Image: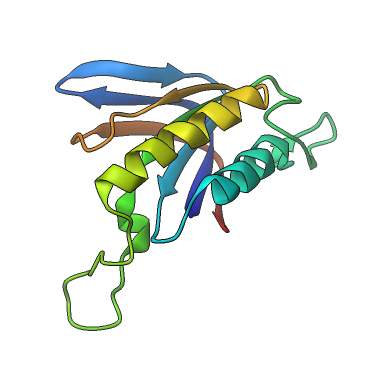
Length: 145
C-alpha cells in the first residue's frame, strides 16, 4: 500500500462539477493499493498518518500531528501510484490491485483514519475527479507498507 500525503491549507474533490469533499487545514491523501495489501497495511498507515508530526508548532518546527492541529483529511484512491515506467513510454499498472480488492481497502483506510480521531472524507472510487489543493509548505511525503 502506498500513500502520498500533502499538507494543505485547503483541498476539495469535484466529480461531475459537484463538490463531494472539502476540507480546510489538513491532509490530502492519495492512496494506492497493490497486490497482497490488506487490513494490516491499512491499519499501519492510518496510524502513521494520524500521528506523523508534519505540522508546525509555535516555534515553526514540524512537531505537531494532524490530530494535534485538529486538521481534516481527504482520502483519494490513486492506482497510478503503482505505475511502472521502467520499460517503454507507457506506464504499466499491473502491480495495482484490482478494483474489487482496492475499493474496500480504500474505504477501510478512511474509516481507520477516522477512528484515529481525524475527520476524514473521501473521493469517489473509480470516478474521474478534479482534485484542488493548496499545498502548505509545500510538504509532500511518501509512505509505503
